Length: 150
Image (tube, one colour):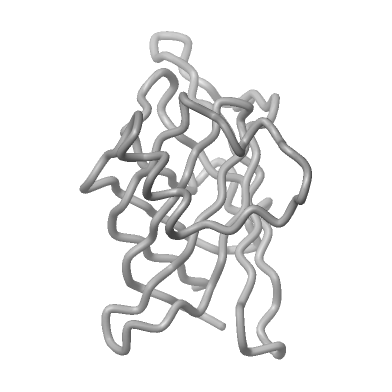
């Protein structure tokens, strides 16, 4: 896989985890899933005049094409901005094996709207009650996604 462009639905939980789906705008299929977690990472080239970004370790996995590789990325998100997108940065180009990734939020859901959306579109794979199951602070971001390898 060298590139994908479409829509993504990302569900962020208060424990630092998120899950998501990619949707093709061409055929309405969902070719990829995303899973990520907030990690403790500092940009060694960080500009001290700027607020540091949050970093997520993210896996992008193909649903159907088993020949496609699972992509592991280090993504940035502006700190303290729940509606912010996710992106790669030139500082992590080697870490991300040449992949570029952008997600820009166009619709932001919180509270009961986010919970209803999560319950409709995301399956809980755990039979026991988990923190994600009743997370009243979860948010859902919907927007344009693109990832590619140059």
